[in-house]
Image 1 (cartoon, rainbow, N blue to C red):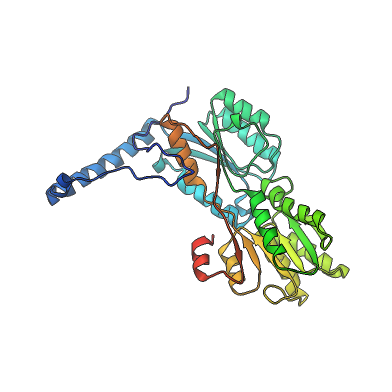
Image 2: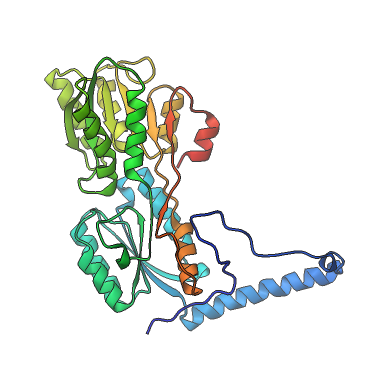
Length: 352
């Protein structure tokens, strides 16, 4: 039977809203002797350290299995993985194991092993939206709670506790609406897609497909996957350049692929960015990508927030304390950035 770690320090609040701090003050506290206060603080700190040591020693850590995409996939994924590793530590009350793959079948195998190993929670960023029903049903039967992060899946919501994700369709819609606002006579687009079937690819592709279908002056010069990879993106753009086809927009579904696309343009001495011949669009808001916007070399970058670990931690604490998760889907707040308006403060605040 799985142990439940009940935290008396958890405030009853949903992670989708700003959490209120637990605590108060009084005039009695204000009049407390300073030396006594210092001694009490020292004793409390020692007690907390002892409690943490006792928890680790007793084996009462919350056991989590975390399935993610390859951390080397992109700057976004590196930041996402680092955020998860910083949160799910023994010091924070967790016994965490990690598995990585860009392939759905390998992720499913890892999930099945985590369930067999008896993890309390399975945290999942799925490579593909489909194919997870059987695994999630196995998890439910075993008493393993599932929390989705970063990416949605096509599964009955009753099979998971919460989904902490970006709205990928909204990201695509925001980007395409920005592009439409540029007022080009004709949009000849090189569309470089991410890993096919992933939530990010589907959401960011949908908006482009719909706009192309609805407008005669929107054309796809090519639409190919570079699987989030800069080198593959460069090859796609180089192939279009070699073919002699005209284009004036590169819509890349992440920053790394946009970077690869720009490398091909630079090699061919084709201007891009503000006042250039080609509009450059990316996603993820890597710091270096936002700096490209500030320099005028790119035109647009859509935010995709990688910092979901604290939200997951609060969901787990709510469950462990007997609380109820009232909002099953928690959407990360995100925005798009334009080279004409971005500031250094934006880079410092939103760059990853």
